[in-house]
Amino acid sequence: NMKKIAIGGDHAGFEYKNRLTNFLKGKGYEVQDFGPETDASCDYADFAHPLSTSVEDGENDMGILLCGSANGGNERV
Image (cartoon, rainbow, N blue to C red):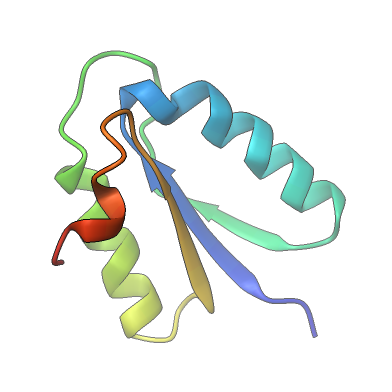
């Protein structure tokens, strides 16, 4: 049973998020993309909070967040 992975970030992580999503899907993982949908400037928290909640609620087994500041791992959500 493959893990369900939530992925998201901000505009700085947009391109890498898309590449990583394609890679994971190619390996057979189910991936839920929380955005952003474009590389336009956006607020990381708008995507990090719903993604984190999906993992906390058991909708996804794990989450990956990609941002430009590298502070995502320290954010309390």
